[in-house]
Image 1 (cartoon, helix red, strand yellow):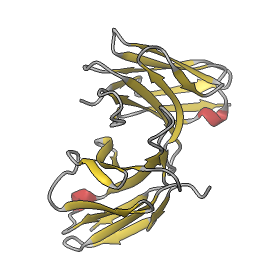
Image 2 (spheres, rainbow over the protein chains, first blue to last red):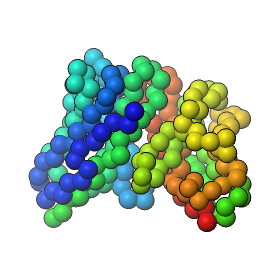
Image 3 (spheres, each protein chain N blue to C red):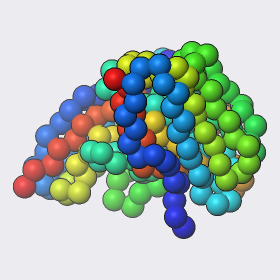
Length: 111
Length: 115
C-alpha cells in the first residue's frame, strides 16, 4: 500500500520553513526520506526506525510517530538548494528493506 | 567510489523489441534493487536481490519483465516484448546488507521510450 504524502506541492521563499507529511495505512518498521532533483536520481536524506533511532541529515530533521503510522520531514530556513521532489519510502517488514514510496512532494524555493 | 552505474542512459525502441537495461552496483554492496518511475505511479519497486539471489519479484508487472544478477557486480532487467506503457525511468539502487540500517544509493537511471 503506497503511503500518502502531503502536501503534493509547496512553494517557499528562502528562509521559510516547511513540513512534509507521510502517512501509511499499515504499521511501519522504518521510514526513509529521499530528495530528487529534476532529471536526477533520488538522494538519501534520512532513515527513521521504529524505536526512535534516526540517521540522516544535519540541516533537515524528521519525526516518526509509530502509533499514527506517520512521519514528518521538517525543513527549516529553506535554501534554494532544497528545491526538488521529496519522497518517503516505508518499510512494513523489519529487515526486508522493501520500500514502498509515496508519490512525492514537490518543493520549490524561490529567492 | 564510482557510484551505481546504469546503461544505457537513454533508450528509444519500437514496440515489440527486446530491451535490456544494465546495472553495476557499488563495489561491496550486496543488495540490489530495480525501480520504475512514472508520473502516474511514482517510484515502484520491481525486484530486489540479496547476495545475487532474487528475494521478491512481486513488483514485476508482467512475464514480459525479467531480471538477473549473475554476479555481485552486474544485473540486468529485460523487457521482451516491449510496449509503449513500459516507457518510464528505470532506476537501479544498491546498499550494503551488513552494518545495520543504511541507505540505498540510486544510479542515474535509464530513460526508456517505447514507440
